[in-house]
Length: 201
Image (cartoon, rainbow, N blue to C red; front, top):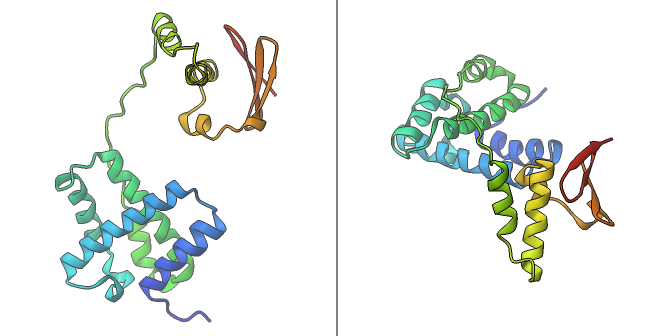
């Protein structure tokens, strides 16, 4: 039978076991979650007059979490999207806590039921062909850095890879040929040449 875990122990295990060992979350995700709980613990400490080590899971009820999220928008000027990302981190922790501390299942379910804030999503814009040509012509291709930048932009334009995918590319992902290159991205092979890109399996 499991012994009751303190909030600080649960939070530590969430980061060391759940995020790092089990989910192998990216450093960006871990940093974002860390910042969320740093802000939440500061808020809870000021509101409840408790140090982080004295907080219990029961202290983090929906009313406190809701006030924390509202404060992110009103006092820190965060957008609704940023608020929702903070709520996602909190929910992830409470889903983990549901398995580790089932005695708190009522509180956990109330927190997990907290809705995300609706916001208007902006349409993603795109460049016209003349704008694309102007961007591709901008780097000075007489220099090594200019050629590097031109290739980076050309790959981005022809493949539609996200920035995170572009920056994670390695030399082994690229097979060069005469007038074209094959680029491995996940389970796709993207063929890049002077004007077109084809996608194959």
